[in-house]
Amino acid sequence: MILIKYVSFDIDGVLVNSESRLRLCLRPNNEVDWDCFLDCKKLFMDKPKPRIIDILKQLRNRDFGIIIVTGRRESMRECTINQLRSFGVNEFEELFMRPDNNTDPDPIYKSWTIKSLLRRYEILVHFDDNADTVSTLVSNGIDAVVIS
Image (tube, rainbow, N blue to C red; front, side, top):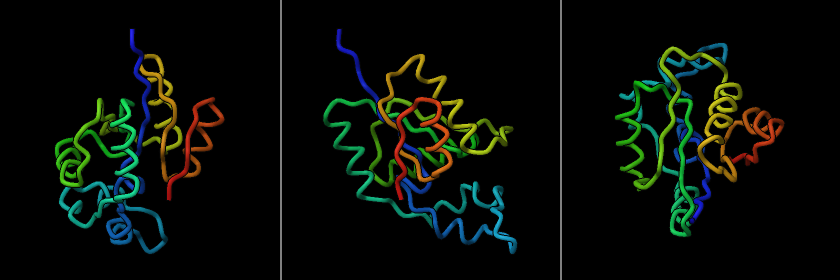
């Protein structure tokens, strides 16, 4: 029996450079307007991060399973999949998205999500751009790496 090992990736800030969209959606007090940032109509502003996408593809070619865990809302599923495909991210086992009504901070949401995924998948490492998320994952015994 072959056991597949998995690697998980965040999207914004990891596979996708979303800085332009983020800047557009900053309020004067530097808080993010999440309704603005999580608007499918603004995804055209994003750019792929080729170096990280290449790492994802290399891992996939070495028979690692790929899981994507994002803070994007479930209602963004179709536009997110279309964006990932347009950037060459075509092969992944699962895309886990935040429930539309969930407002937990990313470290809490992703830690809970990945901990629950460990019941089904052997996830070796999670790549994320949020240092607090990575710190929370590591403190929960989950290997994670900050990508900038």
